[in-house]
Length: 320
Image 1 (cartoon, helix red, strand yellow):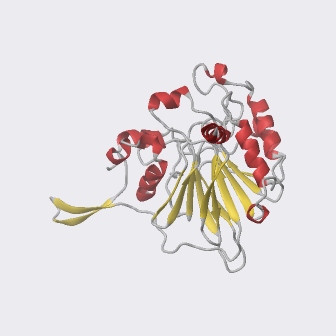
Image 2 (image 1 turned 180 degrees about the horizontal axis):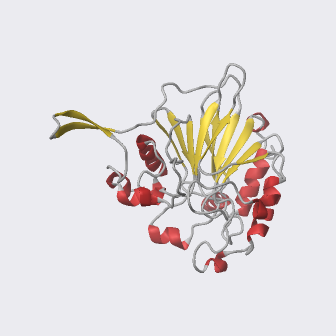
Image 3 (image 1 turned 30 degrees about the vertical axis):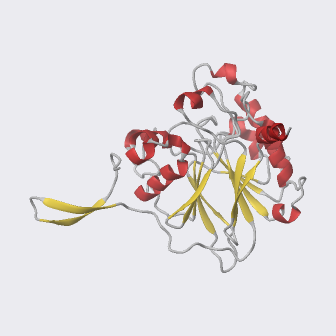
């Protein structure tokens, strides 16, 4: 269960020549109290839209946008939504893998961001949209990744309610007088396949249980403890260490929706908004589609919203 290059401690006994270890001590990320905001407002966590792909589930995403704008009723629920996190792979990108061109509906990176911004601009202005990059978004693969390149993503820079961050990133939400708010750690999750393939307890379910991978990394206090698990930008300071323990840890990349707790830290993985790809079929991944976890900052209730049009069609056929 120990990753190469991990930092850990041992308890035991011995002398200068030999040490007998009785227990392994992991760095462990934990918080002692689950915060509750004095004000009732909600945050939604999504990612992996892959706008520009032929498999982008646009109908489902537009249904989600309509929900945020109160067009499906539930006004009392919708008006409490103040934050929308998009954790990487907003667009499908260009030249990400060999032969990608045949899978693209929009073949230009700038045009992909223009189309994405057009859809996001339909969302009511009262919602803050926090966007961080992933491996498809036209930034370097080396982590940490910088904010989206303004040369291509300029339409997002022009949106007043959009906040662009790097990857990974800490974002504080819900701060007000006498309440310090929630610290949200966002990380797209490019390191996850390595741990799903190399840590025995994670291998069986692979990427189909991303919250287990996220818990493992919280245990190690590092987003990619093994040096070769991601391409790392060389620097004196390791930017992938989880120095500050978050209240909420959010990721994407796996296209699998999951919500759980680890040592009182809320762990959230977002589903994909792209139909199942040939790559996922070959790897045995079973993606979720158009699911949006929503967290109430006052009650801490978690609700998973479902905007999968195909599910509705299946239910309709079953009734018929």
